[in-house]
Image (cartoon, rainbow, N blue to C red; front, top):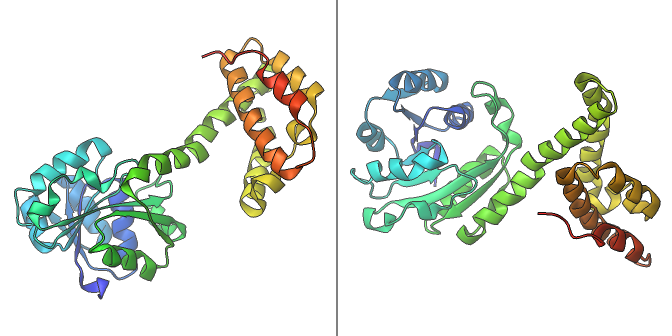
Length: 292
């Protein structure tokens, strides 16, 4: 299948629609154009991708073999209901939600179309510039097996690694991504706050933590969690951990997080040092029930 002959249309002209459309355009895939509930947004996206702006979904459907639904998650099903009013036989519908599966396209078999979730593991932060970096992104695809090779080939030809996943795994998959990205922001925010309590300005606290944070992230990615582990849990240092617990005694949320994650670090440390006994450290972390 020559994917360059498959015309790709977008419903939704936000950051994801802009980014994927321009990325596809730069890689010489055929872009039919954009429909947006705000027509001016469709015009902007069409100019950005040298494609067409559509005033109706019907026209876009007619001109597109593959339709990417690049709207907020809460709107995907409503867009699909609108699409069902038109001829969809042999069309390929793709949404880009990380958390939702292709099962949102309920009853799609009766339309003759094929449904997929296509998710880039990439933070699309700027609709006019993120396309320059998305070539590095890993994509996951989930949906109907019949046309899966077509969707998979698009990204393989573009040079992006691809993983096919199952619908029942989408929430666990998305939880993993949120844990590695969004929840880390929460941890960093706690760390900043603790330094501010020590008298650091916010700017200075950030400068203190930045090299530690970035070097550690790089070390994890290069050497895996076991080899990247350092600190008091790695040393089985109950004295220091006990002092940390005392320091957090008035910040119950931070204390709960500290205990939970320290227990996770113990499991990593056991893998690193299989002959070391961590019973005392585990007892210290778990001697009081973690408050809800």
